[in-house]
Image (cartoon, rainbow, N blue to C red; front, side, top):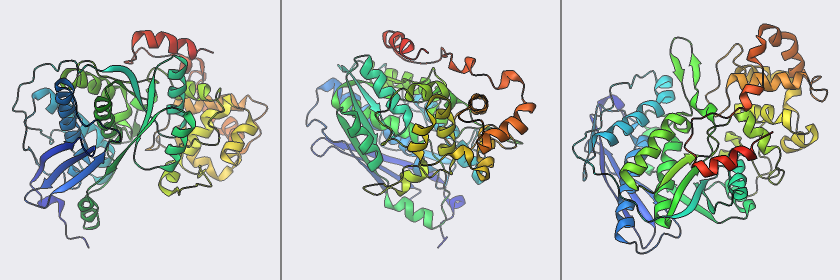
Length: 450
Protein backbone atom coordinates (compact mmCIF):
# COMPACT_ATOMS: atom_id res chain seq x y z
CA UNK A 1 0.00 0.00 0.00
CA UNK A 2 1.43 3.37 -1.03
CA UNK A 3 -1.16 5.90 0.14
CA UNK A 4 1.25 8.12 2.11
CA UNK A 5 2.22 11.18 0.06
CA UNK A 6 5.36 12.88 1.43
CA UNK A 7 4.72 15.96 -0.71
CA UNK A 8 1.37 16.57 0.98
CA UNK A 9 2.93 16.90 4.46
CA UNK A 10 3.43 20.52 5.54
CA UNK A 11 5.15 20.31 8.95
CA UNK A 12 7.34 18.05 11.07
CA UNK A 13 6.69 18.53 14.80
CA UNK A 14 8.96 17.87 17.77
CA UNK A 15 6.26 17.32 20.40
CA UNK A 16 8.29 16.70 23.52
CA UNK A 17 10.63 14.37 25.40
CA UNK A 18 10.82 12.88 28.88
CA UNK A 19 12.99 10.66 31.05
CA UNK A 20 11.79 8.40 33.87
CA UNK A 21 14.57 7.83 36.45
CA UNK A 22 12.67 4.92 37.93
CA UNK A 23 12.78 2.85 34.74
CA UNK A 24 15.73 4.47 32.97
CA UNK A 25 13.40 4.99 30.01
CA UNK A 26 13.36 8.00 27.69
CA UNK A 27 10.51 8.83 25.34
CA UNK A 28 10.83 11.06 22.27
CA UNK A 29 7.63 12.22 20.54
CA UNK A 30 7.20 13.42 16.94
CA UNK A 31 4.37 13.95 14.44
CA UNK A 32 3.65 15.08 10.90
CA UNK A 33 0.98 17.81 10.73
CA UNK A 34 -1.96 16.65 12.88
CA UNK A 35 -1.13 12.99 12.40
CA UNK A 36 -0.58 10.36 15.10
CA UNK A 37 2.23 10.70 17.63
CA UNK A 38 5.35 8.71 16.75
CA UNK A 39 7.16 7.76 19.97
CA UNK A 40 10.70 6.48 20.14
CA UNK A 41 11.71 4.67 23.34
CA UNK A 42 15.25 4.30 24.70
CA UNK A 43 16.30 2.44 27.82
CA UNK A 44 19.45 3.30 29.79
CA UNK A 45 20.42 0.45 32.15
CA UNK A 46 21.76 1.38 35.56
CA UNK A 47 20.54 4.99 35.44
CA UNK A 48 20.38 6.46 38.97
CA UNK A 49 17.03 7.12 40.60
CA UNK A 50 18.07 10.59 41.75
CA UNK A 51 20.54 13.20 40.51
CA UNK A 52 21.86 16.40 42.06
CA UNK A 53 20.54 19.62 40.59
CA UNK A 54 23.51 20.33 38.31
CA UNK A 55 23.52 16.86 36.76
CA UNK A 56 19.74 16.75 36.50
CA UNK A 57 19.80 20.01 34.53
CA UNK A 58 22.56 18.69 32.25
CA UNK A 59 20.59 15.48 31.67
CA UNK A 60 17.55 17.53 30.65
CA UNK A 61 19.65 19.55 28.19
CA UNK A 62 21.17 16.36 26.77
CA UNK A 63 17.72 14.78 26.48
CA UNK A 64 16.44 17.70 24.42
CA UNK A 65 19.49 17.55 22.18
CA UNK A 66 18.89 13.83 21.66
CA UNK A 67 15.22 14.53 20.86
CA UNK A 68 16.27 17.00 18.18
CA UNK A 69 19.04 14.88 16.64
CA UNK A 70 17.09 11.59 16.67
CA UNK A 71 14.23 13.33 14.88
CA UNK A 72 16.19 12.94 11.64
CA UNK A 73 14.94 9.34 11.39
CA UNK A 74 11.35 10.60 11.20
CA UNK A 75 11.81 13.91 9.37
CA UNK A 76 13.29 12.10 6.35
CA UNK A 77 10.01 10.22 5.77
CA UNK A 78 8.50 13.35 4.20
CA UNK A 79 11.06 16.22 4.44
CA UNK A 80 8.26 18.80 4.83
CA UNK A 81 8.95 22.53 4.41
CA UNK A 82 8.25 23.51 8.04
CA UNK A 83 9.83 22.35 11.32
CA UNK A 84 8.07 23.10 14.61
CA UNK A 85 9.56 22.61 18.07
CA UNK A 86 6.84 22.46 20.73
CA UNK A 87 7.36 22.42 24.48
CA UNK A 88 10.73 24.17 24.55
CA UNK A 89 12.74 26.69 22.51
CA UNK A 90 16.24 26.53 21.05
CA UNK A 91 18.83 29.19 20.36
CA UNK A 92 20.53 30.10 17.08
CA UNK A 93 23.63 28.00 17.77
CA UNK A 94 21.56 24.87 18.35
CA UNK A 95 19.54 25.58 15.23
CA UNK A 96 22.75 25.93 13.20
CA UNK A 97 24.12 22.63 14.52
CA UNK A 98 20.89 20.82 13.70
CA UNK A 99 20.72 22.31 10.22
CA UNK A 100 24.24 21.04 9.56
CA UNK A 101 23.44 17.56 10.88
CA UNK A 102 20.26 17.25 8.82
CA UNK A 103 21.65 18.76 5.60
CA UNK A 104 24.97 16.94 5.61
CA UNK A 105 23.89 13.78 7.37
CA UNK A 106 21.07 13.30 4.87
CA UNK A 107 23.37 13.95 1.90
CA UNK A 108 23.32 10.38 0.60
CA UNK A 109 19.58 10.11 1.30
CA UNK A 110 18.96 13.27 -0.74
CA UNK A 111 21.19 12.11 -3.60
CA UNK A 112 19.49 8.72 -3.88
CA UNK A 113 16.01 10.26 -3.69
CA UNK A 114 16.74 13.05 -6.16
CA UNK A 115 16.22 15.79 -3.57
CA UNK A 116 17.96 19.06 -2.78
CA UNK A 117 17.87 19.92 0.93
CA UNK A 118 20.33 22.84 0.99
CA UNK A 119 18.65 25.95 2.35
CA UNK A 120 15.34 24.17 2.89
CA UNK A 121 15.82 22.92 6.47
CA UNK A 122 15.01 25.67 8.95
CA UNK A 123 14.97 25.07 12.70
CA UNK A 124 13.14 27.91 14.52
CA UNK A 125 15.43 29.71 16.99
CA UNK A 126 13.58 31.70 19.65
CA UNK A 127 15.73 31.48 22.78
CA UNK A 128 18.96 32.85 24.18
CA UNK A 129 21.33 30.39 25.86
CA UNK A 130 23.71 30.96 28.75
CA UNK A 131 26.91 28.87 28.78
CA UNK A 132 26.29 25.46 30.36
CA UNK A 133 27.97 24.98 33.76
CA UNK A 134 30.03 21.95 34.74
CA UNK A 135 28.01 18.96 35.90
CA UNK A 136 30.53 17.57 38.40
CA UNK A 137 31.52 14.59 36.25
CA UNK A 138 34.19 12.01 37.15
CA UNK A 139 37.09 11.02 34.91
CA UNK A 140 35.79 8.00 33.04
CA UNK A 141 35.30 7.24 29.35
CA UNK A 142 32.14 5.86 27.76
CA UNK A 143 33.60 4.20 24.67
CA UNK A 144 31.36 3.34 21.73
CA UNK A 145 31.98 -0.22 20.55
CA UNK A 146 30.79 -1.30 17.13
CA UNK A 147 32.16 -4.81 16.81
CA UNK A 148 34.81 -3.85 14.25
CA UNK A 149 38.55 -3.32 14.41
CA UNK A 150 38.49 0.45 15.04
CA UNK A 151 36.69 0.53 18.39
CA UNK A 152 38.77 -2.41 19.62
CA UNK A 153 41.96 -0.50 18.82
CA UNK A 154 40.62 2.45 20.83
CA UNK A 155 39.64 0.28 23.79
CA UNK A 156 43.07 -1.32 23.97
CA UNK A 157 44.82 2.04 23.55
CA UNK A 158 42.80 3.52 26.42
CA UNK A 159 43.49 0.44 28.52
CA UNK A 160 47.21 0.86 27.83
CA UNK A 161 47.00 4.52 28.82
CA UNK A 162 45.30 3.67 32.12
CA UNK A 163 41.99 5.39 31.31
CA UNK A 164 38.98 3.98 33.17
CA UNK A 165 36.30 3.02 30.65
CA UNK A 166 32.93 1.47 30.03
CA UNK A 167 32.26 0.00 26.60
CA UNK A 168 28.84 0.99 25.33
CA UNK A 169 26.62 0.31 22.32
CA UNK A 170 23.14 1.04 21.07
CA UNK A 171 20.91 -1.79 19.88
CA UNK A 172 20.75 -5.54 20.23
CA UNK A 173 23.58 -6.95 18.10
CA UNK A 174 24.84 -10.22 19.61
CA UNK A 175 28.13 -9.75 17.74
CA UNK A 176 28.77 -6.42 19.45
CA UNK A 177 27.75 -7.93 22.79
CA UNK A 178 30.27 -10.74 22.28
CA UNK A 179 33.05 -8.26 21.42
CA UNK A 180 32.16 -6.14 24.44
CA UNK A 181 32.28 -9.17 26.73
CA UNK A 182 35.64 -10.15 25.24
CA UNK A 183 37.15 -6.85 26.43
CA UNK A 184 36.58 -7.83 30.06
CA UNK A 185 35.51 -4.25 30.82
CA UNK A 186 32.26 -2.87 32.27
CA UNK A 187 29.56 -2.68 29.60
CA UNK A 188 26.50 -0.54 28.89
CA UNK A 189 23.91 -1.54 26.30
CA UNK A 190 21.33 1.16 25.50
CA UNK A 191 18.30 -0.10 23.62
CA UNK A 192 16.54 2.04 21.04
CA UNK A 193 13.06 1.24 19.69
CA UNK A 194 11.93 3.38 16.76
CA UNK A 195 8.23 4.11 16.56
CA UNK A 196 6.31 1.30 14.80
CA UNK A 197 4.40 4.06 12.99
CA UNK A 198 7.58 4.99 11.10
CA UNK A 199 7.81 1.48 9.64
CA UNK A 200 4.13 1.70 8.72
CA UNK A 201 4.80 4.97 6.87
CA UNK A 202 7.68 3.29 5.04
CA UNK A 203 5.33 0.56 3.86
CA UNK A 204 2.84 3.21 2.74
CA UNK A 205 5.25 5.17 0.55
CA UNK A 206 7.39 7.34 2.83
CA UNK A 207 10.82 8.48 1.70
CA UNK A 208 13.58 6.31 3.09
CA UNK A 209 17.35 6.05 3.09
CA UNK A 210 20.58 6.57 5.01
CA UNK A 211 20.62 8.78 8.12
CA UNK A 212 23.55 10.13 10.19
CA UNK A 213 23.32 7.29 12.69
CA UNK A 214 26.62 8.19 14.36
CA UNK A 215 25.18 11.60 15.24
CA UNK A 216 22.18 9.90 16.85
CA UNK A 217 24.35 7.42 18.74
CA UNK A 218 26.63 10.27 19.87
CA UNK A 219 23.67 12.08 21.40
CA UNK A 220 22.50 8.84 23.04
CA UNK A 221 25.88 8.13 24.62
CA UNK A 222 26.28 11.74 25.74
CA UNK A 223 23.06 11.34 27.72
CA UNK A 224 24.27 7.96 29.02
CA UNK A 225 27.56 9.48 30.18
CA UNK A 226 25.75 12.21 32.11
CA UNK A 227 23.39 9.73 33.74
CA UNK A 228 26.37 7.75 35.01
CA UNK A 229 28.46 10.80 35.90
CA UNK A 230 31.22 10.14 33.33
CA UNK A 231 33.12 12.98 31.67
CA UNK A 232 34.12 11.50 28.26
CA UNK A 233 32.31 10.04 25.27
CA UNK A 234 34.81 8.37 22.94
CA UNK A 235 34.25 7.19 19.37
CA UNK A 236 36.69 5.55 16.96
CA UNK A 237 36.33 7.43 13.69
CA UNK A 238 39.54 7.79 11.72
CA UNK A 239 40.38 10.69 9.44
CA UNK A 240 39.21 9.08 6.17
CA UNK A 241 35.63 9.42 7.46
CA UNK A 242 35.87 13.11 6.56
CA UNK A 243 36.09 12.35 2.85
CA UNK A 244 33.10 11.33 0.76
CA UNK A 245 32.43 9.79 -2.62
CA UNK A 246 33.02 12.06 -5.62
CA UNK A 247 29.97 11.69 -7.87
CA UNK A 248 30.28 12.99 -11.44
CA UNK A 249 27.80 15.83 -11.94
CA UNK A 250 26.97 15.99 -8.24
CA UNK A 251 30.16 16.53 -6.27
CA UNK A 252 31.07 15.03 -2.92
CA UNK A 253 28.52 12.93 -1.05
CA UNK A 254 29.76 11.58 2.28
CA UNK A 255 28.03 8.39 3.46
CA UNK A 256 29.74 8.74 6.84
CA UNK A 257 29.54 12.50 7.36
CA UNK A 258 28.64 12.20 11.05
CA UNK A 259 31.82 10.15 11.53
CA UNK A 260 33.88 13.02 10.10
CA UNK A 261 35.90 15.78 11.76
CA UNK A 262 33.42 18.56 10.97
CA UNK A 263 30.64 16.86 12.92
CA UNK A 264 32.94 15.78 15.75
CA UNK A 265 34.36 19.28 16.21
CA UNK A 266 30.99 21.01 16.17
CA UNK A 267 29.17 18.44 18.31
CA UNK A 268 31.95 18.42 20.92
CA UNK A 269 31.89 22.21 21.17
CA UNK A 270 28.11 22.20 21.47
CA UNK A 271 28.14 19.66 24.30
CA UNK A 272 30.59 21.82 26.25
CA UNK A 273 28.75 25.10 25.62
CA UNK A 274 25.12 23.90 25.78
CA UNK A 275 25.01 20.67 27.82
CA UNK A 276 27.85 20.38 30.37
CA UNK A 277 31.14 22.28 30.41
CA UNK A 278 33.04 19.23 31.70
CA UNK A 279 31.72 16.71 29.13
CA UNK A 280 34.31 15.78 26.50
CA UNK A 281 33.45 14.17 23.16
CA UNK A 282 36.17 13.01 20.78
CA UNK A 283 37.33 10.27 18.45
CA UNK A 284 40.47 8.56 19.64
CA UNK A 285 41.45 7.58 16.08
CA UNK A 286 40.74 10.90 14.35
CA UNK A 287 44.41 11.74 13.58
CA UNK A 288 45.07 8.40 11.90
CA UNK A 289 44.44 6.84 8.51
CA UNK A 290 42.60 3.55 8.13
CA UNK A 291 45.90 1.88 7.27
CA UNK A 292 47.52 3.15 10.46
CA UNK A 293 44.57 1.76 12.44
CA UNK A 294 44.76 -1.55 10.55
CA UNK A 295 48.47 -1.80 11.36
CA UNK A 296 47.67 -1.24 15.02
CA UNK A 297 44.88 -3.82 15.03
CA UNK A 298 47.18 -6.39 13.43
CA UNK A 299 49.31 -6.20 16.58
CA UNK A 300 46.37 -7.52 18.63
CA UNK A 301 45.11 -11.09 18.17
CA UNK A 302 42.72 -11.15 21.14
CA UNK A 303 39.66 -10.44 18.98
CA UNK A 304 40.33 -12.44 15.81
CA UNK A 305 37.39 -14.80 16.39
CA UNK A 306 35.03 -12.06 17.59
CA UNK A 307 35.25 -8.90 15.49
CA UNK A 308 33.42 -8.10 12.25
CA UNK A 309 32.94 -5.00 10.17
CA UNK A 310 30.54 -6.64 7.72
CA UNK A 311 27.35 -4.59 7.68
CA UNK A 312 25.39 -7.31 5.91
CA UNK A 313 26.05 -9.79 8.65
CA UNK A 314 25.10 -7.30 11.35
CA UNK A 315 21.55 -7.52 10.00
CA UNK A 316 21.52 -11.32 9.72
CA UNK A 317 23.13 -12.54 12.92
CA UNK A 318 21.37 -14.91 15.27
CA UNK A 319 22.35 -15.65 18.83
CA UNK A 320 25.30 -17.81 17.71
CA UNK A 321 26.50 -16.49 14.35
CA UNK A 322 28.35 -19.07 12.30
CA UNK A 323 29.84 -16.56 9.84
CA UNK A 324 30.92 -13.00 10.57
CA UNK A 325 32.01 -11.94 7.06
CA UNK A 326 29.94 -12.13 3.87
CA UNK A 327 33.09 -11.64 1.78
CA UNK A 328 31.38 -9.68 -1.00
CA UNK A 329 30.43 -6.27 0.45
CA UNK A 330 32.62 -3.12 0.37
CA UNK A 331 33.35 -3.38 4.11
CA UNK A 332 34.64 -6.95 3.79
CA UNK A 333 36.71 -5.95 0.76
CA UNK A 334 38.25 -2.96 2.48
CA UNK A 335 39.02 -4.59 5.83
CA UNK A 336 40.67 -7.53 4.10
CA UNK A 337 42.72 -5.22 1.89
CA UNK A 338 43.71 -2.91 4.76
CA UNK A 339 44.83 -5.74 7.05
CA UNK A 340 46.65 -7.78 4.40
CA UNK A 341 49.90 -5.73 4.38
CA UNK A 342 50.24 -5.96 8.16
CA UNK A 343 48.99 -9.43 9.06
CA UNK A 344 50.37 -12.89 8.22
CA UNK A 345 48.39 -14.32 5.32
CA UNK A 346 47.27 -17.53 7.12
CA UNK A 347 45.93 -15.48 10.04
CA UNK A 348 43.92 -13.16 7.78
CA UNK A 349 42.53 -16.06 5.76
CA UNK A 350 41.62 -17.76 9.02
CA UNK A 351 39.60 -14.70 10.05
CA UNK A 352 37.71 -14.43 6.75
CA UNK A 353 37.66 -18.11 5.83
CA UNK A 354 38.86 -17.32 2.29
CA UNK A 355 41.28 -15.19 0.26
CA UNK A 356 39.25 -12.35 -1.23
CA UNK A 357 42.21 -11.12 -3.25
CA UNK A 358 42.39 -14.36 -5.19
CA UNK A 359 38.78 -14.17 -6.41
CA UNK A 360 38.90 -12.63 -9.88
CA UNK A 361 35.14 -12.06 -10.02
CA UNK A 362 35.45 -9.53 -7.17
CA UNK A 363 37.57 -7.12 -9.22
CA UNK A 364 34.85 -4.47 -9.51
CA UNK A 365 34.51 -4.19 -5.74
CA UNK A 366 38.21 -3.60 -5.24
CA UNK A 367 38.30 -1.22 -8.22
CA UNK A 368 35.74 0.99 -6.46
CA UNK A 369 37.86 1.04 -3.30
CA UNK A 370 40.81 2.28 -5.39
CA UNK A 371 38.53 4.74 -7.21
CA UNK A 372 39.42 3.05 -10.48
CA UNK A 373 36.56 3.11 -13.00
CA UNK A 374 34.12 3.85 -10.18
CA UNK A 375 33.60 6.15 -7.19
CA UNK A 376 34.24 5.23 -3.58
CA UNK A 377 31.38 3.03 -2.30
CA UNK A 378 28.68 4.48 -0.04
CA UNK A 379 30.14 2.66 2.93
CA UNK A 380 32.47 3.39 5.84
CA UNK A 381 35.67 2.55 3.99
CA UNK A 382 39.01 4.29 3.61
CA UNK A 383 40.13 6.72 0.94
CA UNK A 384 41.03 5.56 -2.54
CA UNK A 385 44.68 6.42 -1.98
CA UNK A 386 44.74 4.11 1.05
CA UNK A 387 43.43 1.20 -0.99
CA UNK A 388 45.94 1.95 -3.74
CA UNK A 389 48.77 2.06 -1.20
CA UNK A 390 47.69 -1.25 0.34
CA UNK A 391 47.50 -2.92 -3.07
CA UNK A 392 50.94 -1.55 -3.93
CA UNK A 393 52.39 -3.11 -0.78
CA UNK A 394 50.81 -6.45 -1.68
CA UNK A 395 52.13 -6.28 -5.24
CA UNK A 396 55.63 -6.12 -3.74
CA UNK A 397 54.96 -8.96 -1.28
CA UNK A 398 56.03 -12.52 -2.09
CA UNK A 399 53.06 -13.80 -0.04
CA UNK A 400 50.41 -11.88 -2.01
CA UNK A 401 51.70 -10.89 -5.44
CA UNK A 402 50.51 -14.06 -7.21
CA UNK A 403 46.89 -13.64 -6.13
CA UNK A 404 44.50 -12.81 -8.98
CA UNK A 405 43.51 -9.26 -8.02
CA UNK A 406 47.01 -8.28 -6.92
CA UNK A 407 48.43 -9.50 -10.24
CA UNK A 408 45.70 -7.57 -12.06
CA UNK A 409 46.58 -4.40 -10.12
CA UNK A 410 50.25 -4.73 -11.02
CA UNK A 411 49.45 -5.42 -14.65
CA UNK A 412 46.61 -2.98 -15.40
CA UNK A 413 46.27 -0.32 -12.72
CA UNK A 414 49.73 0.42 -11.37
CA UNK A 415 51.08 1.64 -14.75
CA UNK A 416 48.40 4.36 -14.76
CA UNK A 417 49.34 5.72 -11.33
CA UNK A 418 51.88 8.31 -10.37
CA UNK A 419 54.21 6.86 -7.70
CA UNK A 420 52.99 9.56 -5.31
CA UNK A 421 49.47 8.11 -5.57
CA UNK A 422 50.45 4.73 -4.17
CA UNK A 423 52.90 5.49 -1.36
CA UNK A 424 52.34 4.47 2.27
CA UNK A 425 54.62 6.74 4.29
CA UNK A 426 52.44 9.87 4.23
CA UNK A 427 49.38 7.82 5.20
CA UNK A 428 51.02 6.75 8.46
CA UNK A 429 51.68 10.33 9.57
CA UNK A 430 49.07 11.55 12.09
CA UNK A 431 46.98 14.65 11.44
CA UNK A 432 46.67 17.65 13.75
CA UNK A 433 42.87 17.73 13.40
CA UNK A 434 41.54 16.03 16.52
CA UNK A 435 40.00 16.72 19.91
CA UNK A 436 41.98 14.21 21.99
CA UNK A 437 43.06 15.58 25.41
CA UNK A 438 46.70 16.66 25.28
CA UNK A 439 48.11 14.24 27.87
CA UNK A 440 46.33 11.29 26.30
CA UNK A 441 47.42 12.31 22.81
CA UNK A 442 51.10 12.15 23.73
CA UNK A 443 50.71 8.61 25.06
CA UNK A 444 48.59 7.55 22.09
CA UNK A 445 51.00 8.92 19.50
CA UNK A 446 53.87 6.98 20.99
CA UNK A 447 51.76 3.80 21.05
CA UNK A 448 50.93 4.12 17.35
CA UNK A 449 54.56 4.46 16.34
CA UNK A 450 56.14 1.98 13.95
